[in-house]
Image (cartoon, rainbow, N blue to C red):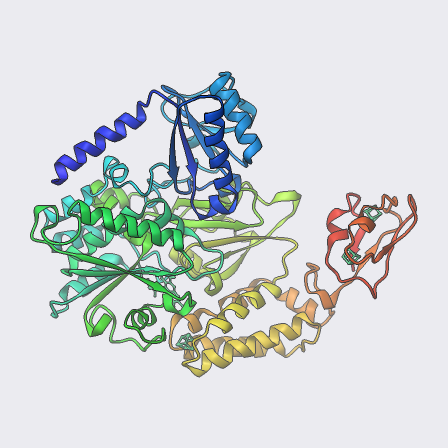
Length: 616
Ligand SMILES: Cc1cc2nc3c(=O)[nH]c(=O)nc-3n(C[C@H](O)[C@H](O)[C@H](O)COP(=O)(O)O)c2cc1C
Ligand code: SF4
Ligand code: SF4
Ligand code: SF4
């Protein structure tokens, strides 16, 4: 089937789906949805329709971004909009479907939003939700809206048009377009994508490779996984365009084996591409051939580093090597190789179809376009978001994320994962772009964004990240292997109340040595969490070292719990909840805590409604 026929068939099927004369039920079955119980909701929905004798069509989609509301279900009656319901379980699902589909009574108070041309009075539109309004979805344009296992859904929404356009251009023109868009790599370093393609394209060796880096090793980051689970073809189309532009015929997707759903969706997508002539010889009737392979990684953080990644594909140990030579000149199997991140590639087809200046219209002077983030931590609305670069940090936290829950105060925001830094609350006006984040001592990284409230200890946080980086250090070079370990030992001592005043200068000294002496990005950036917390939260280090206190009440050896007899009314809740029965007291009389039994689990602190439990 030629592409024209395939496209008109896809458009016909998509239109039929939009005009379906029976209810359409869409369910988010990405990894996040499944973890929240979406499969149970899916079964309950199917059972309910059977019970009420209502025919209906079911469609699996990826994550639409509102992870805090999962499991999410969208129901659409003929001629109506989709109505989204969130935080479902089997019982609630049954009630909603019976009421809406059988009794024609929409339970408005349970509805989150509507999506589509029609609206329903009293229910906000998806685009108007405070979480969604500031967002611009380019890389995530199809996530949560199409069935990721149906190539026709992707094609009906403009998929593979970017490739078609690119194949009608000279490879150098394609590269010029990407350069003009200002797109920078979304995998961390922010290197201009067009320039990288140009270097690989100009390399004299005719055998070249393109690699999609889907390793996503940062703890807390899930953007690339969600994108691959929700819209794998956008990434694969980006790879094909890149391959054509640099003149290569073979590509690899390097993805961690811990992402089984993303791998399954990629395998399905590749099968469909082969079936419809989008891989192999004479792609779209042009003299362009390309083959794709999936390489599963074992899940080592360092294997996301491009030279280690290539060593891993070659079957060796995933260890970085010095650069130069850069992969664009000497990469996989010694051949010129271009490596791009998942999100970088997903932007490419949109740039080709909508034009470089359209893309460059979003963002700032030096940071064009949009960026996806996994918004997590102490924020009301967690999820997968995509925002124009240059957006203020405060807008992400307060408007999109809804601010810090439980009336707590915002303390800091961690950007860039374990290699990033902690930005203090008073920098909320900071524009989120490559330059501003670097100037603030942090990095964009791949897009992890963790919000921290007043209960977060800013000595414990770098300790957590250093535990990760020191374990993940491949050990090849001394500054990283020993330096990360030594920094961690010092932080462990400080958190245990065994720090010395000179530790701060020592930490600064090791930071610099590791940063300057490490061979690869892992070691070069590992000190960032320590460096930024020392820059912005030094008094907290001093409180641990000099006063032997942890102001946030996190470092257990440095505090104990006690009950304020003035505030305690003897309700007994804490005593009932204490797992080791360390709380004593008679009913309606002030209680107390047996210190030698207390394990400092914080349960009493969390359950007391009268703020009578103190951290001393
Ligand atoms: C320790 C380490 C881990 C990395 N992990 C990833 C990763 O998981 N995904 C990714 O795309 N890039 C990762 N990178 C960056 C890549 O090496 C590379 O710069 C990137 O894939 C290039 O693609 P881009 O130009 O599209 O960003 C990592 C770098 C380092 C030093
Ligand atoms: S910096 Fe760390 S991870 Fe990178 S090569 Fe050296 S030891 Fe390995
Ligand atoms: S929960 Fe609070 S008020 Fe109730 S007994 Fe415990 S400390 Fe006292
Ligand atoms: S901190 Fe935990 S162990 Fe200690 S008294 Fe409170 S509930 Fe009991």
